[in-house]
Length: 295
Length: 229
Image 1 (cartoon, rainbow over the protein chains, first blue to last red):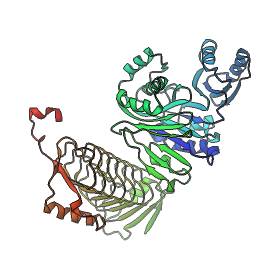
Image 2: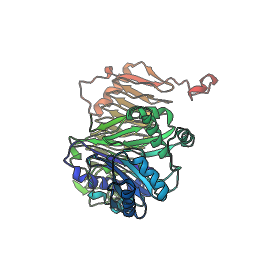
Image 3: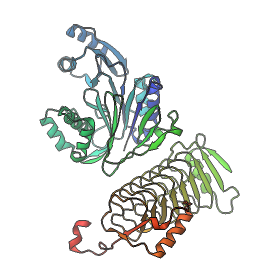
Image 4: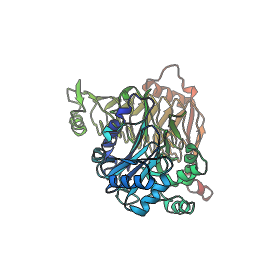
């Protein structure tokens, strides 16, 4: 079992409350996943590059990076994580520099708008440690984990990000993740953990790198991913939802004029503003649902 | 009327109060406020009481019901009225997966849609869905009737035994051993009674439905059918 939540705001009305709403949703899904929790928040103007790091002495690392790049790098700390503001186009260089100079520092996510936080512990504690309730943004996805396929570690927590501004949360378990991991490694996709869900994230990144849209990549996953899944995938502009062909894992959605919300169970949506008048529905199996600010 | 605010009373206490009822009890009408999708509301009832859930219910609402009438003024989550023995469950919104699963008796009426596996392994319950039902519904359904005013999803009635299925709209696909059957007068008559019990509008006639059931070809093993099991 695991719990997933997602909140996509259609307008700016609740942007300043995005984190507070998501914190309540995550906390409500504690019963489904008390091991660890994580979330990705999309916000900011999209200028430059944001990179979320986990590790020690992140402020010092930002200073060292400023010297290395010859440009100002700032870092905003949130608990055990920090978000670097970097010049655009420096992601690969910074990753390589970190690997060489600070190999214990983990990049949890990077892109124009993504910030990605995850930690072991009860969802409410994790949300509070990162100050989720004070965060704002346009959309976000979150996960509460009850581990099945790999150990309870921070690295094994969701979301998994394997591409710029992309991340995935997963409820379910994949049976062919070992063989698929080998295929992906052969294709040059970097998989960091033994977790099955990271393989799904890597698979989508690989497909999109080959030119597929997110919807096409998810559709292809129906053939290539063997197992049970409800996925919510975050992108720079929105999120997408897909359930396996027998809808093994639960999902419910609520849509109003102001937002589209996803949760494993309705009770995580019950506190959202105006949800009593929302269109509440269950996403169908094998069907890709996507919301974007671009369209 | 007894009102219980679920923001103040735990589900365990609420259910405990309902379990204490019997046919001699004075207060048989109950209303639960602020359900907020909580699980296991009004489960295991065994008294002729009337319980209204004023909002959306979570998983297993009215599960294992005997005698009681449970009305949900919203949607209900997974396993609504599962294993019901008798009584009446009315959901005014949609129901999630496995509604009426394994239920032996009683009537489940859904004003909206039901998602996957509606009536899975049903053993005597009558289910009337006024909207459409999802895939894999009535899987291994043994007895009872599943009536759908809208459409049915794929693999309807897979490995069905003696349950009867009536669908007014389109059927995306039939599961193994489920076939369309002739709607005889006796079926139309019984269906009319059931539609009436479910408060279905008079303008909807039993003749608009098609009947489905088991071809019984998988009941006894025949090697040519090995692939269908």
